[in-house]
Image (cartoon, rainbow, N blue to C red; front, side):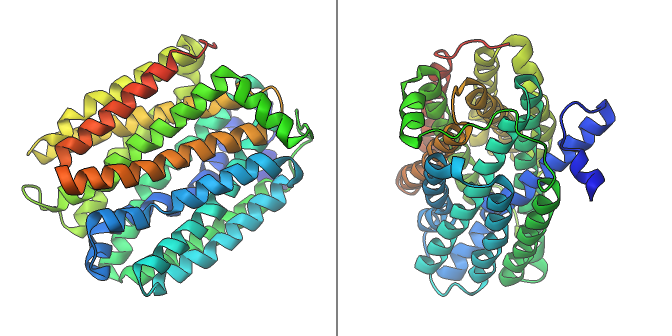
Length: 396
């Protein structure tokens, strides 16, 4: 176990640094694997509960409400919470509502359990981001954050594959039990990997109110929080409602094939991993604009009647949004001049509020006006994110 935790120490050889990135990525995977995996089950859940796509989409993404609230809690109290204790406890507790989803009798209970999941996921997510920011230099943290967001990308791909595969072969209940086991595996990994961490490079204990005001007065942090809002708004709007487009005519994609469709996230694993290096080379602002530009290029393709073209559009949207997420996360930690847990918590709260509002707004647009109008709404939000990026300094 000691050799495993040693890989988390800064200043290692290239081989050890790769192993360290792998551990960081795996922690991220096991932390947020529940977040989007349920989206692969949306068509089945709509049938199971007998509700509309918008209602089911809102219930599935209700976890973002819990994550937003939890992000604010981390921002307020993060400096008082031990990193290892907080991360391990959150992931272990996450297994309880995850398993309970298998027995949710109605949509209200399902949504409540998803909110509870979100609370624990965001607590572990925010505390881990704070941990990485405290233990690594600005240069090292870029690769560490990129590795963590890459694990997030991998959870989108493999989480959906697991959900679709287990549900298709064993049933919906078994899918939720499988994810509860993954939650416990995440707690075990965090217990080992964070347990023998070195002394933090920066770990301030300051007044929470002072930190909040300091972060809100910082124009770059405010812009970063807005960018985070737009990223998940656009991402969740795309990958929630595209499911209903894929299973309907003219595509008519089945449940297992719908899981395989999410190999569209595979290229994002590579591009997100190098986001930090690209940001250092060309600057944060330019890199963000490039990421949003790639996502916008993919939107018109989502309207095609050709499945291959739609999948290409999904690839571009995933690459652009995840790339931007890695850059924005790093920028927040680098820009914060005081408690990084507070800054990370505020960013995550804004990020997940964007997902919640995106689900609610775009769900109504999808139900009332259709998929083309939904895609147009996503384009507007990505354009706003690009404008906010212009307010950032080009850190290199």
